[in-house]
Length: 147
Image 1 (cartoon, rainbow, N blue to C red):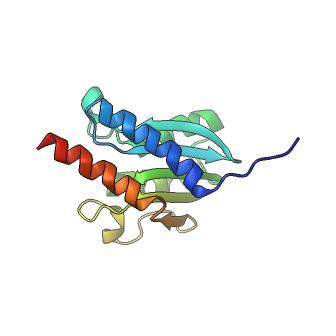
Image 2: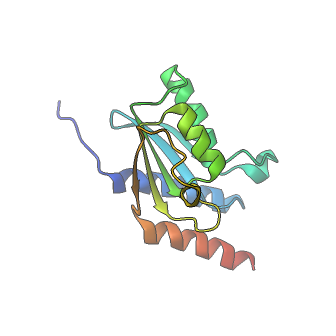
């Protein structure tokens, strides 16, 4: 049996599917997935409006689902793909979960965590700008339609 190895853009496309689903539901279009050993173990999108919960960000929901799937609160060997740079709250949760790698698409100049310094776990690797234009355009289109 041949093992297929996917690249970051493959998984970011999956996160974009989640983000588009969020937009269809009237949520800010952010999607996240968690990958372990080349397999998606969790999918999520923003659900703050539906759940009436300011903490229901895609990353938080994905972390919770991944921890359940792994049977562990630590996600050291997992990668989180998210369409938008995590906020400070999500970066804190990613740090506590000790996620091994974070890959995000578009930067969030207003609310992104990195403007406050690297708040992730010291061992977490970061890749940014994966499918950045697609991720950024989805956010622009969503907010333009709301104006």
